[in-house]
Every structure is written in C-alpha cells, then in structure tokens.
Length: 230
Image (cartoon, rainbow, N blue to C red; front, side, top):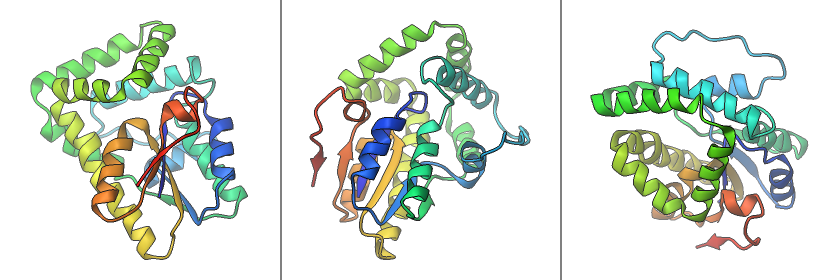
C-alpha cells in the first residue's frame, strides 16, 4: 500500500504524475466521498448543492480553501485528487473513493465539538480569509519541517476535530483500503491529505498491511526520494 501525502491547496500535478506513473499499480484510491468527487472530478462547472445542514464553519473553511487554492496552489482546491483520478484513467486503473460521506462527517463533528472549539473554528476561518497568502505559505513550510509538532498542537487546541476529522476517518479509510487488498488489489496508491499519513499508515499496519509512505514534503522535492516502509 503506497500512501501519498498531499496538500489540498498546492499544485502537485507534476510530482504526482511522476510518482504514480512510475509505479506498477493495480488501483488508485483518493480521499474523496461520492458527493465531493462529483464536484472535484467533474469536467463541467459543478452544480451547487444544497447547503442545508452544512455548518457555518465548514462553509467558511471551504471558501478559505478555494481562496488559497487560487492564490498559492496555482489552481483549485482538490486539484491533486483530480490529477490522481486522471492518471488512473490514463493508465486504465480502477479508481476508488475511500473517504466517509462528507455530511455524515460534519454531523459527527458538530455533535463532538465543544462550544469553544466551534467559536475558534469560525474565528480562524474568518481570519484566514484576510491573511496574506505568503503567511499561509510560511505555515506550510513550518509544517513540512515538523509535521508531528504541528499535529500535536492541533490535537491540543481542537481535540474533537482531531478525533473526528483525522482519527475516525483514518480507521474508516484503512478498513476500505484493507478490503481492496482482500478483493485482489495488491498494489494500491492512495492520495490523502498529508495530516492523515501517520495515522492511516499505523491503522493499516495494525491490520497487517505493508505500507510505504511519501510525505507532502518528499513529493514536492523538499527532501530526497527515500520513503519509509514496513
């Protein structure tokens, strides 16, 4: 199982194509559910779905992600998932969506968050709409240097967010990837957000699945081509 870490607002088309195209694969999996895939993978402008039931912080963070995708990513948010899907099609490989349904995830998150976390998320999203893109780029570089420290800070500040958006989804995605192996897809490349990489790799190893990881920093060429495996 090859896990590739990505950032949803950074243009990774060239390194993703080189990485996926240079491997012998049986399938490609991406961190999307059917609802988000309909938007991200569509060749035509998406029809706006109903926002009913979508919490305010989620709408604000979606706007922020769209803005950052245009300003620092050189494209649209989620372009790395679109690239992975295109490569799978070009290589005649099956494509699998391994994420939980977005509305179910948001529902679990709202129920799990404290009032303080909700206020903090809304405030952070509003602030993020106005901060310079270069500041966000510096934060990405800081994350590249010490991703474990960054994730530890997220867990301390937003325990419910970390549990619902990272831990729970990692377990569910690991179940789906393990099921693909049982179905005969032995060599699967999965493109996920980089913050999922350590937890998802651990979840797969607990299920007896050998894992190789390529982090976001490695994918961008910030480090050498070496990867960790077990």
